[in-house]
Image (cartoon, rainbow, N blue to C red; front, side, top):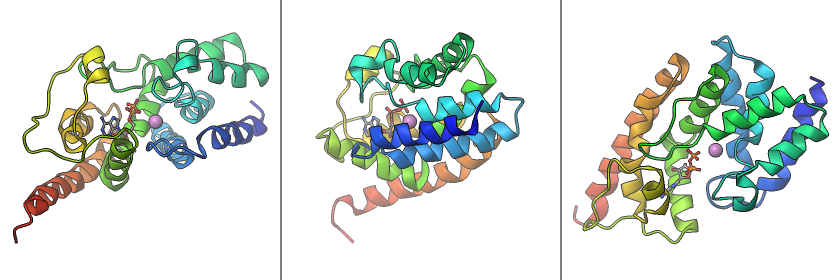
Amino acid sequence: MKPSVIDNAIEYVKDIFEKDFSGHDYYHTMRVYRMACTIAEGEQADMAKVQLAALLHDVDDIKLSPQTHENKDRAQSFLKAHDMSNEMVLSICNIIDEISYVGNDSVVPSTIEGKCVQDADRLDAIGAIGIARAFAYGGNHNRIMYDPDVEPKMNMGEAEYRNHISTTINHFHEKLFKLKDLMNTSTAKSIAWHREKFMEEYVEEFLSEWDGIR
Ligand code: ADP
Ligand code: NI
């Protein structure tokens, strides 16, 4: 693979995500790219697949680009324009297909490359950045931050998870606090441990301030 393919992929995603305010901006993709490379160094993974799948993982996301989601049109057109083999295009699309958290229907990726990219994407949903992204997403989707009368709904399948409208604090219970134990690689598990602890302290502090009583 020519080194310029990665540079071009970075330019491609910069263009797509520059104006995102839903927690999926260009810097999210770049963090996933760097973290996936770090995780992959400790695994027997094909680095080119990890790099390209990480950079392209959100370009056809169902929430961000519903019309290209099914066929991964944006990822495919980038890869084909860079003369990637059919095998390469298929495996990158497969990695992207298996990455998302969709409640109880989430899958463990079938390849080590997919495991590295999924871990990197999930690490960016927890910790300090994860907290910021959750509130950014909530605001962007007109969700309220918290309602003490609305309980989190656990154990949702894909359709219910996608259609469920809840509060951002509930999202911590419905997804974010589950991610640590779902990490695939030992590198990601050790990073997740610290981020989860920080998030737990944050939610505890949030709730202790909620009533406005010292
Ligand atoms: P995935 O990367 O597994 O497909 P998403 O794209 O749904 O996950 O999530 C990306 C970011 O958006 C995460 O940081 C996540 O916390 C946030 N997010 C997704 N759904 C919600 C929600 N209902 N409330 C708050 N934040 C959300
Ligand atoms: Ni992502």
